[in-house]
Length: 262
Image 1 (cartoon, rainbow, N blue to C red):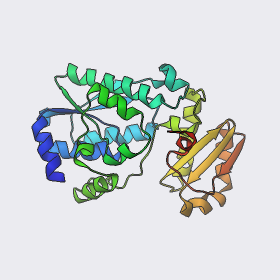
Image 2: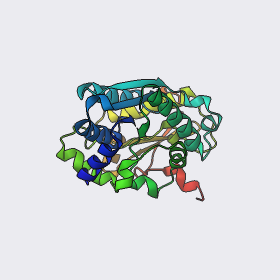
Image 3: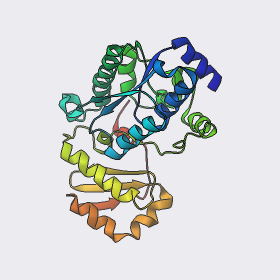
Image 4: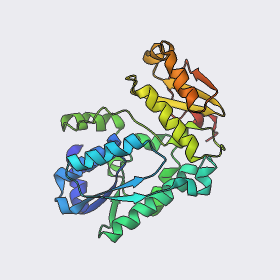
């Protein structure tokens, strides 16, 4: 599969990559780096409040460590009405604006082909943003070739990409029920609350927000870590949540999507 990917990249010859710092776009960018001349590769990263600041900083570190040319764009998703209202199709509008901005930046720097890290698994779940990337003409070589998330992690490990086992993360808007008005303050509260838990060594965590209730989701093996640390409740209370609860079902990806009739 890796050779197929490299052959596809050679066909494209000169590419800009939408880079988030997650394992998918990191793998794609690294393979591109070792396949094409340095001047034919450009990473474009968005600086916005839809992802935790720490993730953004780690993404920049990855680019610098691997000596990859990159451009940053400022992105403010809360200025998008559909995103701010947290509609069920908010991802479509957010992704369309984001990828249009990335494509514009790529074109401005002499790059016609714009790639993203969408993988085959992304085609099997609710991802309204997929439609937006297709409309804009973004190329998704990992999905084209059939790379699953598991394939990407396996190949990343072989290539000694140090974040090969980095937990997946998602837009902070996913922590809120659909049709909840989003604010920068609320997104920040979630980001800070999740960081409290990560500092305890919990790799994957979500704080789902129900008005003044913070519902903690972690993998079941970490439930006792939460229960045995009363200070967690106090720290999350200090962020402005009146109640702190622990979901005994554990961590569920796309939790609020279950409410949708797709």
